[in-house]
Image (cartoon, rainbow, N blue to C red; front, side, top):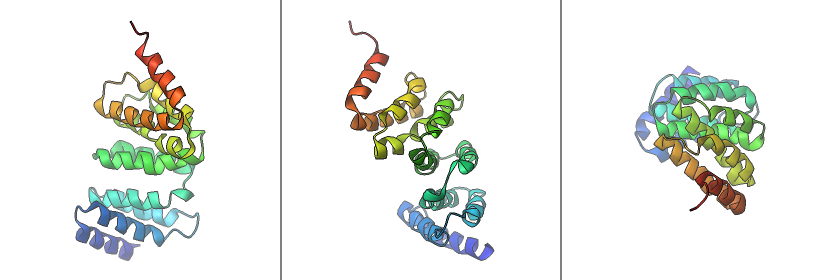
Length: 192
């Protein structure tokens, strides 16, 4: 693994801050491990990259996102810790949407976990909760799931959380305009 890690770090150095180039590095690393459901090697590599910071973390997220079809609930706690440890909103959002969101898209039972997260004291976790339901809403038209997570966050004063709620409500409106309109109007209260 040491040789592979050194090679990835060299590619990261060559990519600099170019997001597209970092995505290519992540895809290439994922392809080496994407042949089956055993994620032990790519997760070990991703943990090593995550232990660094900056671009290495972006590549770790991108690599795991490329392997999302093999993720399940057993990986949830690791990615929650990653979210909590993020200093970059972009990286935290990528974990929420691309990794946790992929698990939620396949297994609706995780919507309950996101509803629990929506009551967290940590705005980073509340934002991740709402963004975690984005893919399910977009791919499966599950407006009910989106609205159930947004419920506790409709009056959230944190600008990042409020922006994420608006984003998910737009997706929900695409999936079920009437249910979303009724939900938003209920929160606005009676008109005078």
